[in-house]
Image 1 (tube, rainbow, N blue to C red):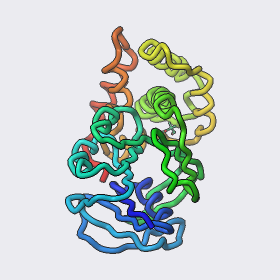
Image 2: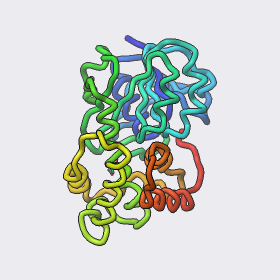
Image 3: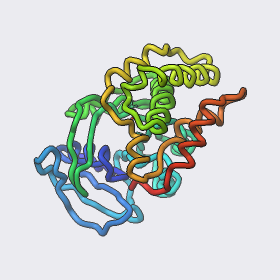
Image 4: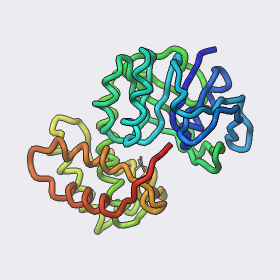
Length: 273
Ligand code: KPL
């Protein structure tokens, strides 16, 4: 049995904790808590016990998952610097890469599961997918319902996901529409415009617009995470997604800049832990 630490008790933190607690000793670190044992209710069933502790009691683990939003990583990093344990970062966007790379064994993963938090320690597993990750392979994650998959090119996959999020999220949030509505005018032209600017910033990245349309189709009824964040008065991930792109642009990117500024002016600040 390995010691697994999970930082952040949002939907993904709870989902991972609930599954891994079946085989490992899991501690869930959150900000506002005193130490105690809980059971996570996943799809109506109680998990094996999970210890909940405040982050300032963080101790070395065999493996750590950081499931907070990207903008919280700065405050989490000092706790992670205590050891050489593998730490898997599961954020949207790419804004966290540079900070995470201060750690000797940083791993990066992309969660393709649907999960919805329905209570303090309650979660629904709404869509079964996989978690692709790199750089090192972790044999302890081989089995189980979370379908961890080690891939050799995680940075490439993250950049592809960044393209999807940088096109879909700001437009759906700004116009308050579902992902599928981006397939229709007047939004389709705007989406293509954003895509062209992204191509200009990352000219060597191999991706076609059809791949983004497929995601719009597959998730056509979804309200993007950015739209949901705005609706709930939470801080969005516009910075690690579009901000990351703008910081790398060497030529004008008027559309990306416009939506970045619009979303920034609408969002309220909050934290995700
Ligand atoms: O990842 C997403 C998000 O909403 O953040 C997409 C792929 C756009 C699905 O809604």
